[in-house]
Every structure is written in C-alpha cells, then in structure tokens.
Image (cartoon, rainbow, N blue to C red; front, top):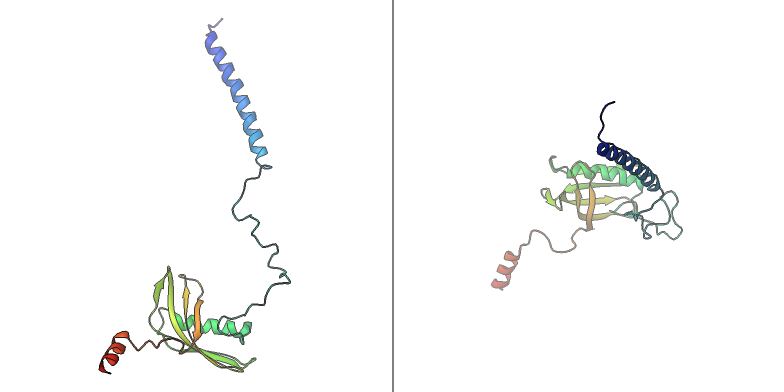
Length: 178
C-alpha cells in the first residue's frame, strides 16, 4: 500500500470543495448580471421620447439649407456640391456655380482667402450669390473635419459688418489727418 500524506489529502479535498463553490458562485454571478441594471450613460430621462421615424407634432419646421429658406432639398444638394468644390483646400480657389432648372434657383460660391484651421477643423471663408425667385449676396465660413463634408458655421448678408480691406491702422491715419 502506497504511503499517502494525510495532510495533503485534506488540503486537496479542501481545494476541490473551494473550487466547486467558487465555480458555482461565478456561474450564479454571471447569470444574474443579465438581470442587474446599472445606470448607463445616454439612457437618462433627458432623451427624446420619439424616434426620427415620426416627428413630434409640436416640432417646428426646419430650413432645408442654412443659406436661404428659398432653397429646397435638391437646390441645397446642388449648392452643397458646388460649395465643396469651391472650398477644396487643394483646389485653385475659383468661383464654382450651380443651378437647378426645375426651380430656377442658381448661385455661385467663391472662396474668400486661404483655408485655416479652427478647433481641429479645416475652415474657409466664402462669398455666395443666390438668384432665382429671391436673390441674395452672402458671406460666411464653412468648416469640415478631414475627409468629411463641409458644414456652414456662419453665414450673413454680404456687406454686414466692417469691410476687411480697411485696417485699423489706415483708419487711425485718416483720423489723425483730419
């Protein structure tokens, strides 16, 4: 009969029993986690109560294009394509025109200055001319992340505010001469 150490036998039995209890506890814990709810980010009460499939009845209508309320979806699609070509930082920076014969809307975009970086986005100022049932001359700024679409960040009627060619130094000299 081989000799066995009684201490070793008891410690092996203890480890086997502890392993069984631990395994049962892990199984119970993992299956109960399915029914245990933790507070999750983005699942708060401030979320909208409707999906995008059906708009709520109290929703205000939004303009299709940030340039003018006169542009419909197709006008804006064409204008946005022309804007992308005109503002391309690697392009020549020339005027790009667009038109929609169905609505008689047309326009053009001309970059105003070199591209610049703002908030990790590539931005460029532009001048826009819209004509059709209503005409408008606009100036604005559009920005985009690398490889994404341009988004108009600011637009206002052309001529609003100070003209860029008048520097404060020239104005101060004119005041000093007077």
